Amino acid sequence: MKQNRLGRSGLQVSEIGLGCMSLGTDEAAAVSLVHEALDRGITYFDTADLYDEGLNEELIGKALKGRRSDVILATKVGNRRIPGREGWMWDPSKAYILSAVKESLRRLQTDYIDLYQLHGGTLDDPIDETIEAFEQLKREGVIRAYGISSIRPNVIREYAARSEIASVMSQYSILDRRPEEEVLPLLEERGISLIARGPVAKGILTERGADKAAEGYLDYTADELPLLRERLAEAAGSRGLAHAALRYPLAHPAVAAVIPGASSRGQLGQNAAAADAEPLTDQELEAIRRLSRANRYTAHR
Image 1 (cartoon, rainbow, N blue to C red):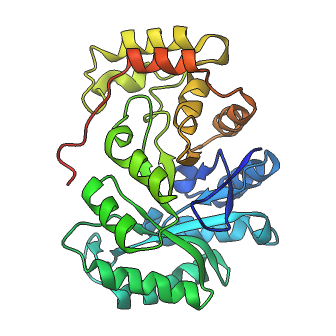
Image 2: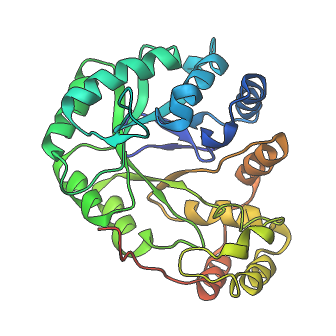
């Protein structure tokens, strides 16, 4: 599987990664899927301390035992659980990040994290303090690189200007082209990679995704999506809708990887097989862009 450099870091990530949030909580099933991903050439795994209250990190740690050096392991921080309270609170402080990373390391059964990401963020955060925490962890060898997971262009601009982030994780797909106007040109200019999550738009952009379209998606209504899916499938031709959807974000030079989720071997195999598919041609890209909508960021500022 093709490997791409993550920003200006020395990390090389498989262009098809695995978004681990969908693995579930059954240990045997989750471990089996991670091993299957490795066997199929997937080397980039993305989790977060938030997923299943830390259990997802624990399962990934068990699955990668003995194979840690074969992978690029990414996790996230910023959502803090307060004992005795329901839910989570947002805490991007330096003190919390330096504390939380120790717990992630323990759950992941590792002494370093390849990519540590801020799991959100707003302009009201103590951004310089957050950056200080990541830089300290990088100097100490606890993390190899850091990035942010955000769909807020103003926040992305601040980190791009004030830090050495290697990456921005953001939702990007044929149905969510919002990064194309504001985010991707900036990242390409600064040598920062985009990690595209949600490339199949909650399953809508798969051959079996008709039922997933019933609630609409972003500014697409449930009435629009069936015909759009049909036309996109025609444009995808023999490669199939899902593979076209996975290849679409990778067509932009700033995108290092897409991270679809998988909860079954069938889904995982479909995702991994997209790495063997030819890149989309200029004609295919033009057709997809003509059929879809160039969405814009509005509320996320």
